[in-house]
Amino acid sequence: MLDVCVEEVLGAMKHKVGAWIIDDTGNPKKGKHSVGVARQWCGVLGKEENCKVAVSLSLANEPASLPVACHRARAN
Figure 1 (tube, rainbow, N blue to C red):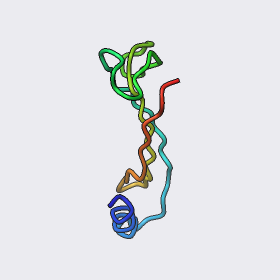
Figure 2 (cartoon, rainbow, N blue to C red):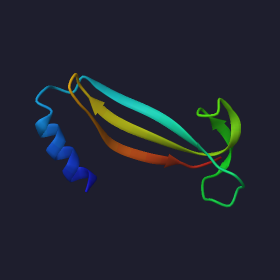
Figure 3 (tube, rainbow, N blue to C red):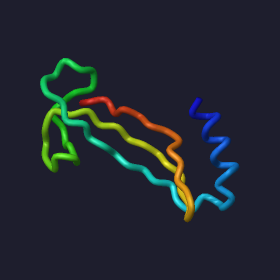
């Protein structure tokens, strides 16, 4: 479904892609029972804590932005 959305929105963006935006997001978690939870840097909290981390890729130009991929990073 994401591939179909990417094709539709890229066609509607009318301008060339101006930037690729790579962003990581930490989701704080209690305990260690969820897959991918580990004590690691959590940018949301500004310190090391139990969390999951996701990295996303978006394309952007002046009038619009479009998320095209998201990956949940594995804890070490």
